Picture 1 (cartoon, rainbow, N blue to C red):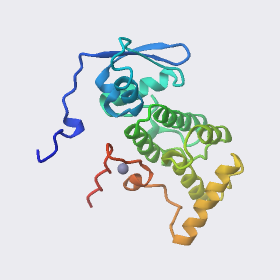
Picture 2: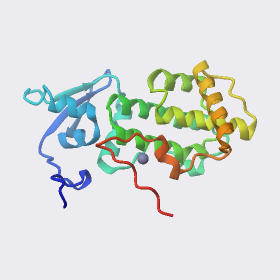
Picture 3: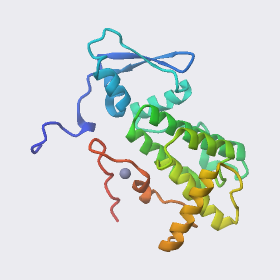
Length: 231
Ligand SMILES: [Zn+2]
């Protein structure tokens, strides 16, 4: 085991005997969740359950800013490691189903926002991976409403916004579809992406590949870099 006094996180045994009541959304929908799941990767829950709360008798946490449907997707990811954010089979998506494509885009943005509220880097990285996988299947640009939703609630330098910008820059080149919608910041970011690509000779025409995902991830002491894919 070397000099580490703790085994790797994923092999650590979990104490599942203690549960927390999480009241989600404005309607305070109740979810009872083992404490060790909540503190697995969410810095929000770590702070809230290990800090001043540790001694408190209350075993209740309120999350008014996250909708219950999004929290359920988060919980399923916590329990299974899978991010299941739509019931639709996206492999079988009719090309013209713009409504479904926009719903998928909206779900990903809302999940990224929840990842920010929960301060959960592995979850945010999982949303990035899901976005990279699905973008080739939803060949549309996000609507102005979705761009605003993202820019008003997510860090501009975060993975999801950078992917949206990269995707818009790529389709602008590939399909001659100028982005006429969206806030000025988004247009400025797309132009910046195009300028950097021109300077570096990068080809933006292709979709971002899953091997490049780490470029859009966040990593720190607790979340080590992903292993580079072996060739
Ligand atoms: Zn990574």
